[in-house]
Image (cartoon, rainbow, N blue to C red; front, top):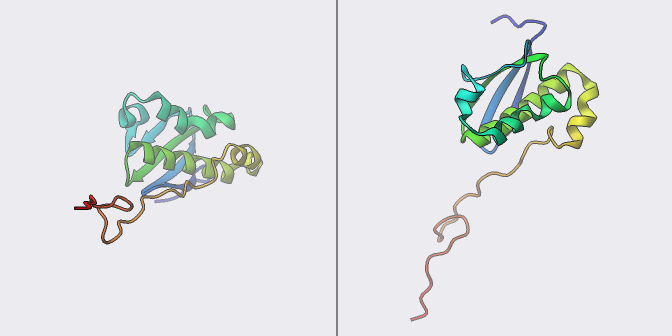
Length: 133
């Protein structure tokens, strides 16, 4: 696939989700895995606002179309990955956005992941029931 000069690609991650974001000059539409954003996330306005946050802060919501390929995790985790990817792509397009995006914490990858299960326990920290007698 030939890359346009107008295409800006970046990868965003959160928990186990990975989102490959492509910014293209356009009207502000967002497509996730071939569907529109509304069709993909359903009726979740908070998640939608979270995804649009980097575009709104940099005043680019009507300048770029966003195409995303995402996998892993759930809808909210994928939305966090999309937001991270959009922020990184915007930074590639214009280095002046760094201070705005950094102050909002959009360039930092959320490092929280599920803790591994330990042996001798039910889950990572939960113990089996203790009986004194």
